[in-house]
Image (cartoon, rainbow, N blue to C red; front, side):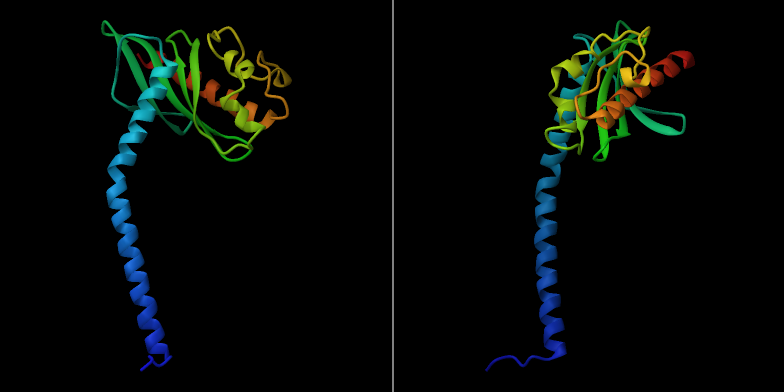
Length: 187
């Protein structure tokens, strides 16, 4: 005998389906949570290592704020002195948040940069991860240089057809440099 199609039967069936789906989703989340966390930690460690000079030990995560915005950073220590900083800096690009890890030496020189995440347009703004000509101009960028695009009176070239992304990238780097300068003033 087939079940009668009543409001009560439909609600009971829908509730049962939702409970089974929620239990399955919860189970998958519980099984994948630790591996995902471990992978994210490894990506973060690799990013920090990519933007800092070789040697020294890395401090635990530290937080501070500059101009009302919170930043996370790590210190590279050698012989008890800070050798460099790895600063996580985020700004808004064309497609959304652009998050970088920026290695900055204590004198304000940019050692290296690495994109952690972005949602920029593929083939245009997404080149902020792969365009060597654009990325290489940040390596070794001294405190005497302006961390702005040439279009804005600075010393850096933009990615072709990606001015907004280029401005966001340079702003993220500039914010990291300013953060390190403020940290040096505190010490």
